[in-house]
Length: 158
Image 1 (cartoon, rainbow, N blue to C red):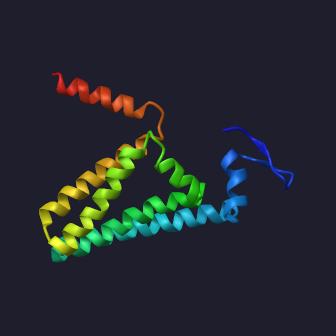
Image 2: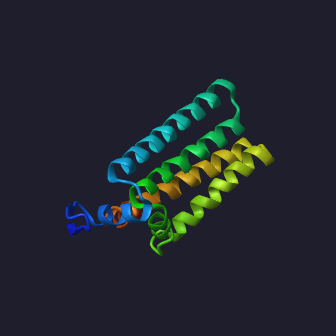
């Protein structure tokens, strides 16, 4: 990212820092706090979900809390880059398939837990959700997807 001179007369550390406050109306400090709070809530909800599952075996409670934790985790990044920018990046062609698979699995996780009440399906969709989320996340790291593909190809060819 390049350094930009803002209207206020100061230099922004990055391009996103100079543009997003004008769009969202939030300062960089406020956005960092929002990110931290959402991420902390996501981690706490995820831990509570696991505790509920292991203590009571309630797959529906687990699935709902886990799904909300994941949504909060993704939502936390909206504070850093702004909601519209986040959505644009999520539906960028390089991330489109991972995003769609993730969202479908998120919905199917909730349907499996609340409507169908199938532990097996919940587990399957949570695993697929996690794989899609990891694939989405590594798309932000240059050459990470290529490296993982090469590793998988070398393991399969052995």
